[in-house]
Image (cartoon, rainbow, N blue to C red; front, side, top):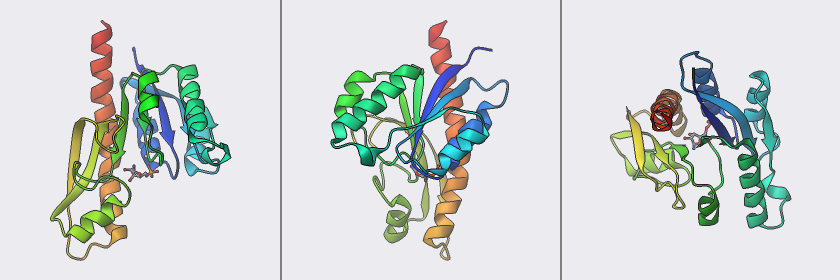
Length: 196
Ligand code: GRF
């Protein structure tokens, strides 16, 4: 079965990376993960990649004198794998307009809010502080604007009165693990259809 090649960029725990890895293990799933790129050498995502025998490369952001040089190294690493699509999964760096001039294939991201509400860091806290009835997560195309690209799909969760930051974060994360593989499946199918 024909599948698209995906490179995932992650910085931390990598539970969304794991959800994508697990989905890609299904024989009829239309995507396969060919590499993980991280910017944090001890991120748990790397351990997950190792356990699933996926090659992982670290381009540590802290070792580079200037941000542009670091980003150019990330770009070169992605280009070496030449994937059809890049998935950001808890990648804690914003990619610049220069990156998107060079990399024109799709880039997806998952964000823990119902975008366009609560962009940026601590989205779950922003939702709690705003006292919203519903929070959730969004998968969107990435462009040079922070959490600003076209929205593909979202999942809602109801915020309970007793929800804490921890409980709400976990509630949203559970939905993220369903949403991201579902959206990647849909986008991968669309890419494969265009290739026919
Ligand atoms: C997730 O909440 C994701 O939406 C956000 O960063 C978090 C990453 O979690 N972009 P994990 O590393 O996938 O567990």
